[in-house]
Length: 95
Image (cartoon, rainbow, N blue to C red; front, side):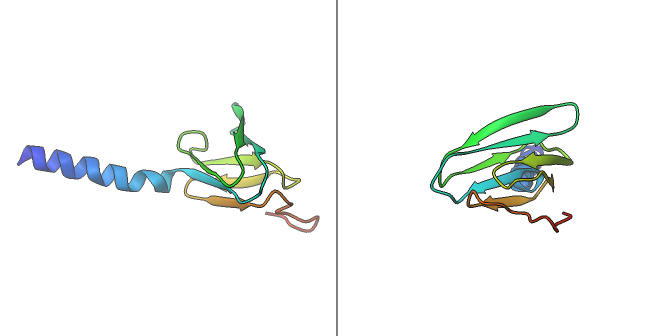
């Protein structure tokens, strides 16, 4: 019985892990570079053309994401950002 409960708990944790991650989909024909900024920690990542990357531990609650879209964008766990390499914001966009 205890073994079944442990397996069920492990399965439930596996199923919910994706909701606690930030995913960036690169829909462009070119590799892009994005930065993740958590205030005291900043990392830069390259995402190949047509690929997606999921960050499970680098945007725990929220973080600033910079990339080929001109401005930083706030993101939180569970968000998915799709980009074709062009601007996701305009001068009037406050998000």
